[in-house]
Image (cartoon, rainbow, N blue to C red; front, side, top):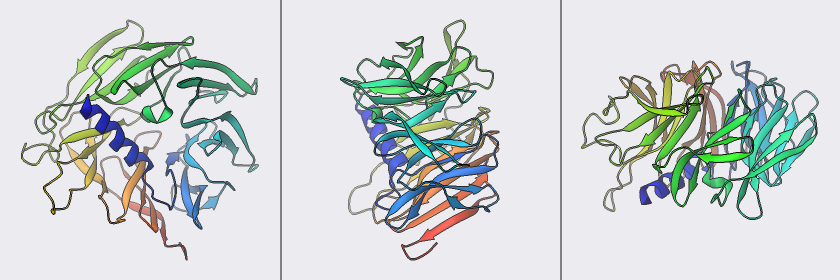
Length: 359
């Protein structure tokens, strides 16, 4: 179980590492694939901004600090977290409203945009919360047994359209497992304690998740699926070794901390960390790879150096069709927004920031 605890702490650092410059960095594609919403420096703080995927049309759209944006299905509204909870911004009017006090930062929209789900402080522990925009109110709260805080939930909150259910990975008693929530009832559907990524297949019939290996130098990770109708799980084919990541145990990673599936499930982003060497040797960078589902090819798409204020990748997101990805890199006084193809090629910087004096 100790390995799982380390995995979650490093994952939290990966997603929220932005120093004092941009707070909790985040980036997300609009559902129509035309724009990106992202957190961006403004003075000593950060604001929510949008930009076209071709690099034009940059503008700030919020007047308060924001964290981890999430577009609504209408490509107009954006949910985001701040110090008060989860708010929703109308990008056309510029107005925002707090919808879930003490909620966030992870959000999932219903497919018609009339509801959203998030996590919020409960009494005690943490609840899953549904907000209904027609009712203009929170319509359901459900306790997740043993879940102490929202930070113990991985960034994979999955809305299941067929029954408005939810699936997520949460760490309870230091074990990361998949939970399924339907009709206000929470059920734990894995018991391995080593889940590091979750997605819904494009047909909406199966959950797919990744489990980290105890020794990724020899077995990088394993994949499983869960049929939501028949309630049966099966292991999916995936090789033990992936070229470029762990072809040789002497150079393979020490840990797989997070796996993010593309919307089509054709590729994955895999975040890995290496063994810490004996001082005074510097610790190797944590690496983010793009990997095809067959496990036959990989490419590095991001690095997170340790210490020294170096620029590190802090958040990355898939485009709706899975053909592109967008990432945020931040350092002590720097920030960079970049897009690239799903296979890691075609890197393009859309926006950069150098110090408080200019962009």
